[in-house]
Image (cartoon, rainbow, N blue to C red; front, side, top):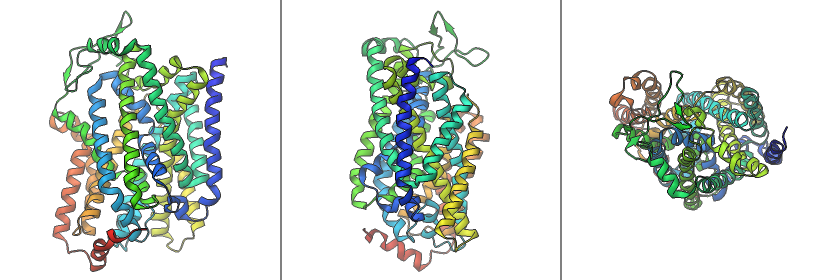
Length: 520
């Protein structure tokens, strides 16, 4: 190993040791009960809640997927997606966080999202809980695979090591500290990882502007590419028969810009709707120490998100000016952050900064694994199969589930050419459409019924799958991001079915009428 590689690896090893130690530190407390393991005993402070929510949400997509899109086709796609996510984040913190914190405790002290839905509607047969748990398993397995792709690409790009081997090793590291430490270890490492991600993005953004010759030179180069900096056009790389961008004399070739029309703008903004149904974010709202601390958490989260997303998009754009011919496909362009870190930073600091990518992947995949484990252990095993299961049995089942998802996630992530952005967008739509409309109705509409909830959740999930695979390829208005039609149809179905079925029982409406009075 050359000396520079040694220092990069050394810095990353320091980071790995820190997060594994955190897992050991919290292992004893987390294993004291299932509520501690899955929800941290509802004891998280505002900083831990905010950075854990954002770090687990953004994943390696923020440091690789988003810059890769900006590098390959310009500002519009990445920018509108980022704007949609910022708006959605704010609205979620503003309108969901406080109510869910209160209602989840009122609803049988729910410790998972499926728990909350089931208890909210007094679903004694656990139909809603089971459907929600299956949806979580489906889409979080896909999500977990995207994080493992991130890890594999990171090490393959940095050192030229085998993608598959590095992906599996990274996945095992994530698995170990999630397996041992539970929710508290995940959230505490999220605090470390969120801070590291933020610093890494800002550092590479500032360094890349300087290396590219300053703002004026960078903007001048990018403006020479048709539509690259436009909000209403999208750059169109000229591709060869193999799908790689054509390069002539070291310069990437572009055709005339395509119009970035209202459909694609709406699709970008629609990403924000997904937040209302993201289990990894909603569970943070449920675990905060006191509902009065949510306002402070919201401010911290929004500052982190706006700065981090702006830096990520700009890194992709500046990377095109500084490394114009380095990446011939969008999947390859998702490594632009890594390559810039290698070029701009001394080896040891490069290792610390690129640990931000591993941090992001670890943060998100650990949350996905933990929530999936809780869905199977708490909602299916204890909720349906063995209702008198002990905490120890529940945690054993959860850890067996973690192992199964680890193996399946690694299998799905074996393709090195997978696009992180595309994988995440599909799973994001699935959760947003399945859980988002129901979460809003659960918190705000007293008349929502159990049949309406079940029908809406199934409609959202089915619409995303059908729209993505069969309707979107038709083009035109049908090419809109599947989250939007899935969300709208699910909301309509909840309303219509709830109106057509008997009103909720007095027990359900009494809970709804009094949950906002609860404060702990």
